[in-house]
Length: 85
Image: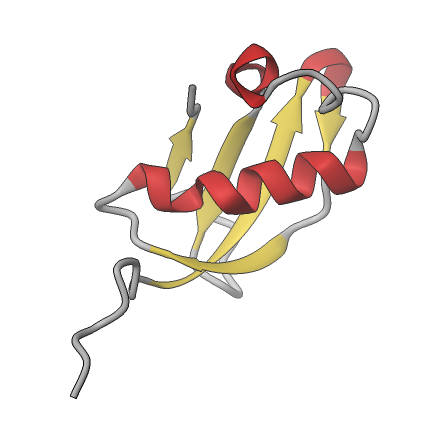
């Protein structure tokens, strides 16, 4: 039997904010709040979908410009804010 996936985590509602007042609609993702880097693929995917021109550059050049606001699904209270980079 295999062990748990690396980022078993739980479900979170995330809102991505960025330069120029960018604000994305909430999305539900599964990640581990104890491992902020487990949110990286979600952040990258959301920014690439919402702002493809901003993500043409290497990830390291733009990822620090964005924040993830996390809350539990169904809640409006922000649990944490992550800026990766």
